[in-house]
Image (cartoon, rainbow over all chains, first blue to last red; front, side, top):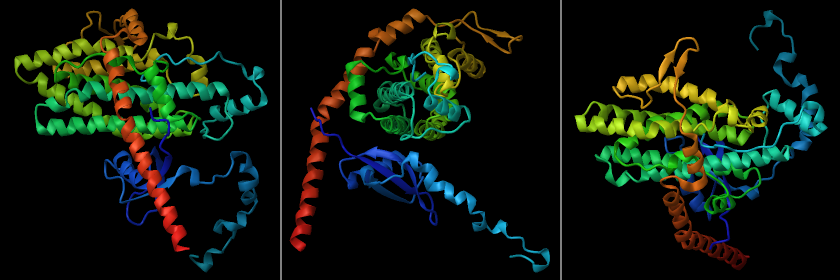
Length: 95
Length: 332
């Protein structure tokens, strides 16, 4: 009996022209070419896409949930990065 | 449901919980989604593996009763539709296996647990599909019951499971409607066809009610699962909802629900109905249903006889990879 499992691939699909590819899920396949073919059958049976990317899951480096604070909290205090931080008088018009 | 009788441990009060467990429960209570690499209680992880795994197995084994009729569909159009439906079930199985895999178990391990009998699939798929009308009854009743359970599960606390459910629910209503369309055609056909439709309803009614699992009074482990939001409604709530929605649909078809005690109860705003035979349910779960052996046999055969194919594609991928590596070396 086969003991070697096919690797896992992450699937990204561009839903329409002009949009980003978006992660939709994962699947197993022996190689990239088969991953593309399987992704077509598993994730685009109802014309959900115009383009597919496949990436082997182990190639993805992910941030760790425990680092969420140090990673993302510093942005919280930098409200001046948003345009609404600045009051512009109405007389100036649209800006 | 597609996951019946999934047992989880007893429940702890907030005071008994460790700080980690309490923080986790508070996130769940606040409606936050839990993602794969985040801390979770071991019981949550294990219960989810059993539940999602059983759900995935049900989708895969669930292809068999309908696959039985693909080559015998009455028209080419019906055949194409049934084929598309069965293909969806394969897809649903794959989404769910992927979700289970994020909890630290591989798909092959899950398959082996199914084949060894350690993991179960829904009792409903151990009943035979004897006539074309059964394709109608399965879509209408079995997929209808599945939707009843899956719609609330879209809000489950575990992110990958929730996302799989959302994707599945989008596709599932096609399944129920194609089943009902078959029933409409049969119920409005010749007297023989109408009899077949009635016969299919007679055989699938109680097995469909069993899909929701034992009555709440006998379902001891659901409190913890509900606190964790991996079970959203009790078995009896969903069963009542299913009966209330399905009875008028049967009336529209001019068919009779095979339950003499069925009666509208104005006070509770729902139907009173007979419970299924729970001893039959437990027998089927134990492996003694009409088709248990046939279903598992078919999965075992596919697994064994597909081994050379899985190995062949792996060997090809490894060879191609080695060739690419050599070509790169030669070019340097």
